Image (cartoon, rainbow, N blue to C red):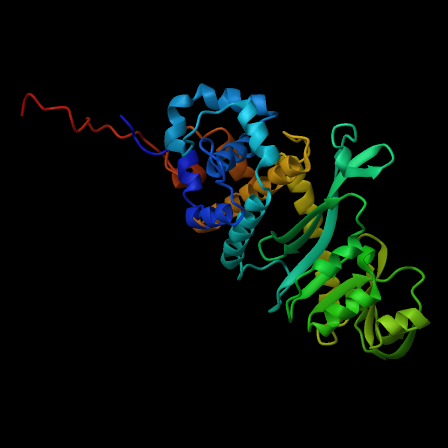
Amino acid sequence: MNLGKTVFAQLFKFLPIYEFRQCVQRYQGTYKVQIFSCWDQFLCMAFAQLTYRESLRDIEVCLRARQEKLYHMGIRSSISRSTLAYTNENRDWRIYADFAQVLIQEARGLYVHDSFGVELEQTAYALDSTLIDLCLSLFPWAQFRKRKGAVKLHTLLDLRGNIPTLIIITHGKIHDVNILDELPLEAGAIYIMDRGYLDFGRLYTIHQSSAFFITRAKSNFDFQRLYSLPVDKTTGVQADQIITLQGFYARKDYPEKLRRIRYFDAPNNKRFVFLSNNFTLPALTIAQLYHCRWQIELFFKWIKQHLRIKAFYGTSENAVKTQIWIAISVYVLVAIVKKRLGIDHSLYKILQILSVSLFEKIDLYQLLTNLKYTLPTEEPYNQLKLFA
């Protein structure tokens, strides 16, 4: 007797199936496909992310061992390593990239009122990138150094909820500053980045889009101070200045005024110099916002530790991007479930619980909130009562 849906099936009920089918149709994901649909592929790869599978063979063995449960989990096709390898290599990765964006938009709506440590009405984004090392002999398309391969994840992180709103996957050779050309700029938003993105021409584009940026100045930064604003040095802010750039090319790229803030971090005994085009926020708030940029470093560390994006199931560029985008989808899905069910646990704890419970038939909310659960004891409806 079926006592209910598996945890896996309950979890993936939170996914918008109609939007997934639209993504599949957009890139002709059903072309000449008779078995093992895009949905089957997504579920198998998501299962691998949730249960930390090491290889395609590992996925095949684990799912075949529970063959009787696969249909109720939503997987309609038989599982084989060769089929998974073929689909990962040939099925367009943009299907899963677009679907991840659908989930990201849903998650951002759920976390829009969350606080990230700074009282701010505008949306604040952190921009950075991380390298994923690859073996050059196995991934020759991802050359980074002479004897080293790598792909780079350029990520724009919404600080409310730590939701990645934009991810661009490139070869390791692509410099971070080039991503500013592909950045969709949102009027009124604040973009926080380190000094690797210091390009005054591109920063001026952000300024002309009515958006704001916060970055750090380099050691050889040349400027002319116009005037200084009063500061409270007990807060760590040592100077708040309105400046213009010196140098022919720098001034040509950014002809308007900038704000320069010098800040001393006493606990860590470090000095920072920030540059911004925002002249209304308090200097201390700008320093605090830059400190929040550390959230994106924690995000990179988290996904590398708890998702399968450092070891890949395929060696082609399409297979690597497919795996990364499905991993991001799983991260965002768990964030959506956490918010919709009102779970207080961290994403790490939720993932750990799910990893050992996917085949169990237990209510998802009860599982994640540690509520006492008992199996139904009613008799089957087709069992007749012989005695009243």
